[in-house]
Amino acid sequence: MPEELNFSGFDNAHPSFRRELLHALGQEADPIRAEGQQAYMKSNLPFFGVTVPRVRRIVRTLARACPFDGPDMWRETILSVWRRAERREERYGAVELLVLPRHAKWLSPDRIGLAEELVVTGAWWDLVDPVAIGGVGAMLKAHPTGTAQVLRDWSKDRDIWKRRTAILSQLRHRSATDRDLLFEVIEPSIACGEFFLRKAIGWALREYSKTEPKAVAEYVQANGDRLSPLSRREALRHLRRDRKTAAHGISNP
Image (cartoon, rainbow, N blue to C red):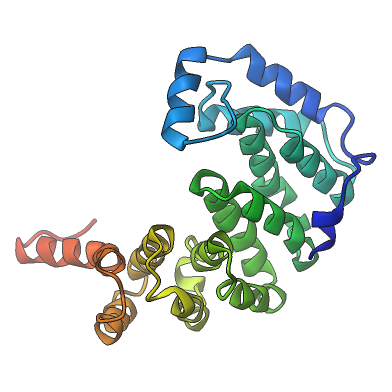
């Protein structure tokens, strides 16, 4: 178990970040929206009723006003906000603090346990996916050797959210995608019946098809009988749209 999962104190957390975050969220609370958000997300935690884009802007503003003196303070502030959360937007705030570009230099492989805690205890797509794409994905791009093996291990883990994270980690990498790694982390879940894994596989392949359509088409053809209908349909969506466009004599912009 990573060291972060055993950590229980917040002595080094930023002294005012969490307080200011709660104040800002409380100022913009919308009880009517909050009720709908909680029902939609099937969340045990209630909501303030603040939209994700607004949470993102709040965190960016606070990160400038409450600078961190190093990665330890940043990490402990994330954990403090995350573990003490009483409403879901507090956890959105912790995730946004993790993935802010200004903190990208601190997303090194020795921080993988921080991302792991958010993935395992978040255990739902609205929390896991931004950690996977903006956090672990950035870590993989900057430190491919140290991070890739972790993702290979996660792709075989019993926890479906660690598997989903491994599959989605290169979603924004485009031409920098490690094709072999992508196909490797898909493999342990390719025949799995879990919806969130099937959807992740299709999504990852669809995004990669925008950069390497031939590679994805060949992969789907070779593994068509093993991929779920959902994964296959999602993987080919962009390719089919391109073919339909071409058939009508329309060039893509």
